[in-house]
Image 1: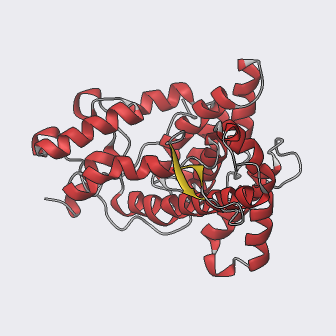
Image 2: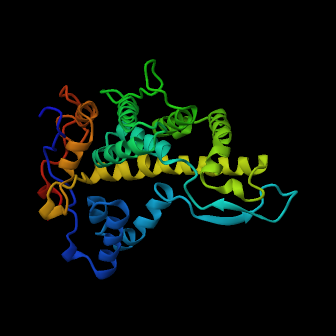
Image 3: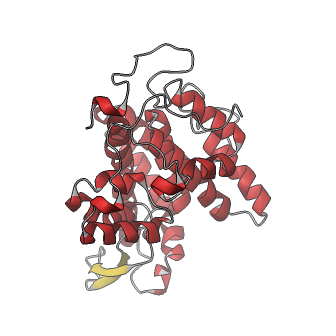
Length: 315
């Protein structure tokens, strides 16, 4: 089918490490990644060539993407009251907003592995968590929100007329994420202040969602301001974790999707083709282009791939 995921014309530049090449500690971390993320991943098996990175990857990535609900004590931001207050260790932003941010920077960067995997993660997350009682409506909204992040040419589209009803929180985060990806030096003080203001407006709802409103000291303006600062730090770190690190890493190494249940322990390409709506698959294919790696658009212009096969770089 024309809208099934386009496959690359060249191989990965670093083959994922098989289990037989992992020591016990790395394999235990690999099992933790599967238990935590739900699937075996070539992200982990590529990282497994560097054992220390592999061992620390799951808790690190979870702290900025998935974790929520763990609370700690911090000095009260309202210094006049003194003492300590309950505060989250992570999960300041909601998962829907995070997936929109992850998807927009990954699409703008045309980073294959992030695009394919977080399209699936994002579509499933939004279909589950968007605030509408009807699951079919949530799925329709999820499709529209992911489809309108960028157009077929990779230009931001979430601010255009006719885009789905992103909230002001979504738009503030998407705008800062897209601007950060484009040129972090161009970010102005006013942009950061405006984003922080929107985050502060949404802090009370996030505080309630965490159950923090039952604790003393969490309803003050000082606490709301501190929480919004945590949201801003999480937003900007999440943005550059993908845009400046994972997206680039996947692109440089040509990290490929898990394609074989026998070799990769999962056929992710079939999962992608059967989960992601056709309109999003077609848009993603346009961005991945004729090479499948996002480096040459479908119109045939742009730079040719620098390497013709996996054997050119790896023994």
